[in-house]
Image (cartoon, rainbow, N blue to C red):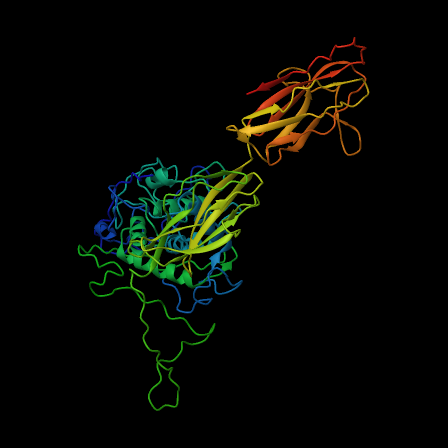
Length: 582
């Protein structure tokens, strides 16, 4: 979905406004709105975004002000352990429970609808921290809606961009100028294009953290971005707020949350205090990682070693009796060309097969390096998940294949089990933060396109007696024997088999009671089915037995119940008829 957003650049004001303005209540709720600390909006050259879209005018927030507080140096968890969050820690380092759940829910939703984007929840957390301090420290109601609503300052050109009203005050209660709204600080015109209903309440509410987090995730993924690639991630962040300082601040929190964080109760988070200031320079500083120009990335704030303690002393001096750590020899890091970057579908078609058969299609994936080129020798693990009995050739449900020089890896043939149903095949590659692709697959029941009796003997029984001859049929598919096909046998009243019969011939269940429908019949390896014994009650007449296969083939067989008749020498009993149906 392409965003239709107007470019609104912050005017080059250099003074700092320090007032906190009270704003009118939202029309829908009549509740007082909480205005973010007002300061001149963070500047930045829109060209610094390096945006690769044809629509580079504007940003999601209208370049509204943001918080510039940086993460503490001491993290609450070990590096790389964000998947196992500690239960407690400082409020500054934690994320309120409802807000954290919204970020993760958005990541999961986008992973389903746009897996190529590879949106990490930690990026949403970084933006949410910078934009609103995680909804003002998690001050949300039970549904995840900020209470009171969160509004940025009026974008009236006085130290901020000039954006005249676009929503009639519906979202921001301002019918003159627009204001950024909600925990993720969308301007109304952007929300009109990107708003989401993530919590299923029928409303797209920018003040609801679930709706806002999903909208932010989809916005960041626009233009086919892959956020596992650093350049795409930078473009995404800069499209949110076109300021290099903003990018560096978000990057700092993103790295921090990747190392670890923890959940804290709603409403107990620490609200940032430092608003951004304008940067009207016409020569923006280079993006992180470009390798040109001096580095201006701000350093994180120092943090005491212990709660309430003093910062650690500086480096020890030679000869003072202290022990300095032994320097480690430098280690070479893999180049971008050697670094695994992404995993893609390499043209795998629909995965469908009949029970017991081999799938025509095989799962094939493509691994790329950090530069986007095919990458060889990457181990890819393929796994079958489901209860259809499907396995890879060789009988395994999990296999590992390395990519070739062209970056592709193809899983072994899939062999369908005997149970019809759906299952999935997953392909996983990479360590640390592995990349995963999921493929849906289906096993259909064995089918037949024709079924017929194997003989034409008349099927006759006296009232209260058993039919002497058994009913035997053969099912075929494209003129070949159809083995393992499910067949349903039903006693019916009419030739079309639309009405079941409650009189006349019947089968018997395990207890010997009359049963006029059987659903557990299956053809043998030759496609042949011999029905159980059939009995007659005391009702005389001509009755019908309808046999239907998986696949829609059917045949109707006549059964006659009458008292024995004496026949003259040389006469024979009439023959039964069987009527095959398409």
